[in-house]
Image 1 (cartoon, rainbow, N blue to C red):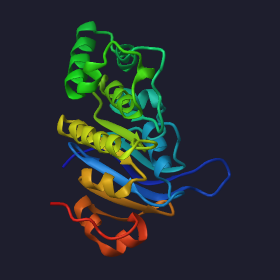
Image 2: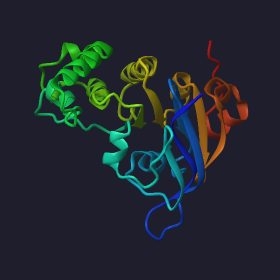
Image 3: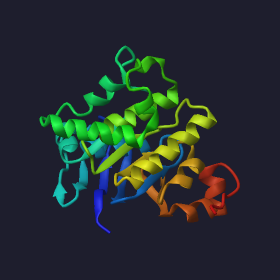
Image 4: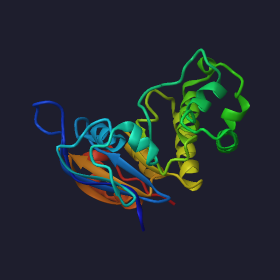
Length: 244
């Protein structure tokens, strides 16, 4: 299956410090959710910075489809179909949900296309449609995250990079957010997900990758990683979970 984005043998870090990523590789197939899990400091967020064009790798390659975009900046990565949803909340609280979402389509010159994408995201995320005219700052944290998801989809990206989407959310909101991640995937957008809530993320993902010391320690079908007792003890916080 073709990959929407691939990082191949990437080494990357910050300044003169030791590299954070040390020969890291991952591929995100079309129509899939790939989840990166691992301990703090393993390099998960650094992977997303490289993938989004925010951090230039010192070696290795970043491929979007067949195009080698190693070292391309964030504007070129976005134009190539790579969207990033940041950790925490990035809505503009004094703007409406509609204004926040439509900002995601600011590079689209065709007004009909903007309207088409806005209709698509309203259909995909019902809370966005329901609160379209509300101030974004009046929404709950989980609702604001769905607004961010909708904004990222305005450019019809090939892949969305999600950095800790459940951070700060209660269990109910977390469950909703992962349901929306699955909806994004089912609607045709591939997802590369970094998440501390490893078990819940792997329940949603198709493929899991466990990072340790800047490399992929193990990868495979997410259900198999969840069921592996050794991985559960080392990286997932306890007993394995079986998906039905």
